[in-house]
Image 1 (cartoon, rainbow, N blue to C red):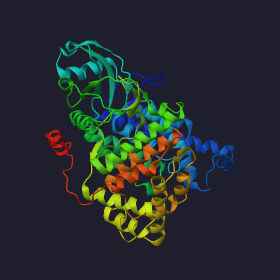
Image 2: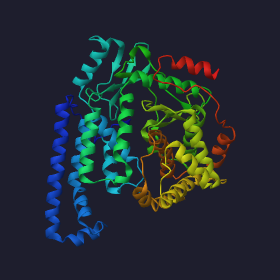
Image 3: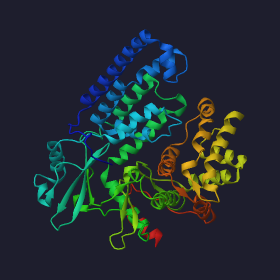
Image 4: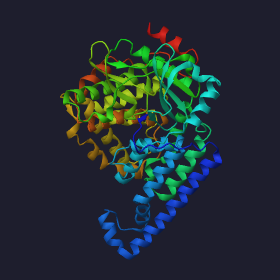
Length: 483
């Protein structure tokens, strides 16, 4: 959820499928027209010189692809995704979190703009949504309701308000039509991405999109998100260094979520903080990831850095991390996490046989890969494992993990036989997002002791009930299980 800036605009959300389809059709036509114009321009200005300047290889496919990536076409993509919002904007935001060694830096800049520039719906649509959820007298629940939102994201925007008892709250209101347009929006955007060949085939864009599709359908259920917030409040109840806002139940529905209003600074804005603060942020996020994966098997999987604030404890004044936006919370089976722990232990000890065995068990590999693919897969995991195996504080500002893995990517894209399992998309998105944030903050973290403590106390095969957040009595199960 991003704070609004001058670049965010008030614009009505297209609610019907026809209106949303028209927006994508207009985008596709505009991109093709822009690309054709760029190809004509190059034919007159000297295509070899242009390709050299853009560091492109000399073939017609790349020439056609690069002709799409122009400032004018970038503007078309940003404007369309920010207009329709919903699933297409979410997919663009997720692509913005990819490593620049994997996705073209030019494309990342486009998607970064998408991530930071969501439009917000006008007050008339806001009022309609509030009436639909709380009746015509909805305003009587508040002494004050800010008509302009202070934050906007892919499926909703957030307004500040004051309850009758003086309590300050944040109200997240879902955009109309986004829940019904998930499938068509993603299909339309994928068709455009495939047509323009923006991304390499080995990324399994369709599988990535299907994973996002499933997550978004869950994220559109704000009651589910409210249950997730309550679960995390309970899991972190004894850790004063984290805070999750309290849900206001009587003002929460499937399309509206109300919780305490909390002040703080988005973590992606903390790059200028003192080194000690930046190290603290990165360490706490990595600790949280390890607990989510291996202790609770329940993770908030959205790595958008605007979902985390740096705040202050109201009593002590000490720094603490405020966790927001739990729509993408997901549970993992014990068998899956057992295999994943085996893989990381294999990486920790550089044991390729162990990595391959459990990579096949978990669904990373089929068992029929070439030796070239197996070697590249193992090496990439061992490189990542070096971060968790480090016995000295790991300096993310000097890490070369990205470059080393980048050298392996062409091999894996060419020789991979199947897409990773769905669980990996969400888990790795959060874990890699935490590492990327640590790199952006130029933080130094003792990752080795964090992982060692988790690994040494991990029990394989132990039966414990998975947190089923889709169950109405999930909170009761969590309370009973942890007491």
